[in-house]
Image 1 (cartoon, rainbow, N blue to C red):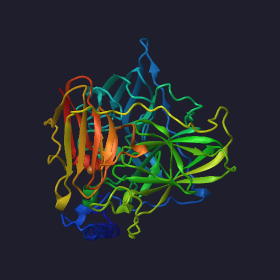
Image 2 (tube, rainbow, N blue to C red; image 1 turned 180 degrees about the horizontal axis):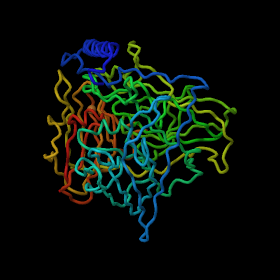
Image 3 (cartoon, protein in one colour; image 1 turned 30 degrees about the horizontal axis):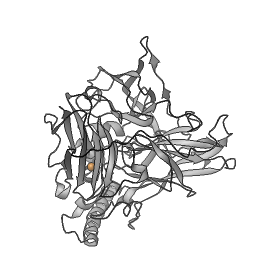
Image 4 (cartoon, rainbow, N blue to C red; image 1 turned 180 degrees about the vertical axis):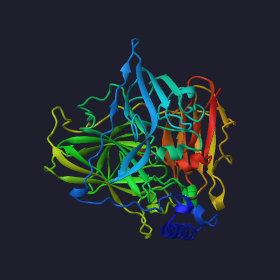
Length: 525
Ligand SMILES: [Cu+2]
């Protein structure tokens, strides 16, 4: 918020947040016996801004918007064509208030483009904003010149065209702007859409796939608002340190919406589209969700999960069974913040920090989505979940593979977030890798907070998390993975098949860290 508009209450709240950060940093340092650093730099994610429970009751019921599917058009040569226009608009995010927002082909968010593996595809992106934007295809493996990163800016009024052959297998990917320095603001303002890749391997009998009926896409994003109803993206000192946190959690652009579910198995495609908040999701009746896919495709077998942790940029697909539900049964999808808003202390391992409430009262668990069984079972609905799925093979590493280390650092006493000691410079190539090889990339987190790392344009599989084999839900192909505080992750990276001098990005997906320079770039030689 602009300082002139800041209310006294907000100033106090900000002061309280900084006190909490400092105090907790000290206590975590004592707990772990780690004397390095201190104060706010020890902190976890920027979620000491507690989420607020949406108003309950029938009078406040807001229907869940179904993300529009866009199957494009097929041209004479068999290529599939899509058009996106980034533009300004206004949306009623809070009841009775018109909030200025951005959207693709609409006033908020964007459609779900249905892509097909192996198909020649062209996406034309028109920029009707009054500022530069880009359109990055997060999760798609494609040539660097159509990646939509900072090197493919789209000027106001211009149209950019990305033509490529879809190489991914069936998966839920997404697209968002990636113009350096403005990504966080443009995303929180509404620029995000989905890319649903179909490869013909998943039939309706195997997984629910009737869009909006039993196959539901959910874009989860937190925002905070100014008193006059604008999206508040004036970054506080805390936001700059731990990332932007909003107190309202919206699903498909609506606060705490309600979905009328059919009485059968359903599939949720979950995207954490938050700028910085690492979400923990579970059902209020404590039944496990059956995870069938992580961000780059299906798992080897469905996996019961009592709770899912999703970092910004990550996706997961889960199955829920409403087949035995009573009519009008209500199940709520609950969301809280990993680390209880207080993050993981130095040396505290994966899992210990997640869902932990440090007694600050800031780890509110709120209703993300209310699901009410209100529709009959659909003809042809999946009768029971598959026992096995067919994931794309993981990337395997041969002997003698090149090992590269990326050290994540910064945040101490106001120091900038860096990778291998450097902040992003669009004019500097940090790394040249040989084309068509498999390498081992080590991400060493030297900070007291988690950084979700994302690498563009490559296939990756996780090899280890702090020396241990990745859990079942972390296996397969990946594009975004949490590197927890003080943790080391190794991944097998299959470099792009063709040499290119156009840089690809590797960066933290806390967008405020990315915008502040926690990003590097590599080319393929
Ligand atoms: Cu980060």
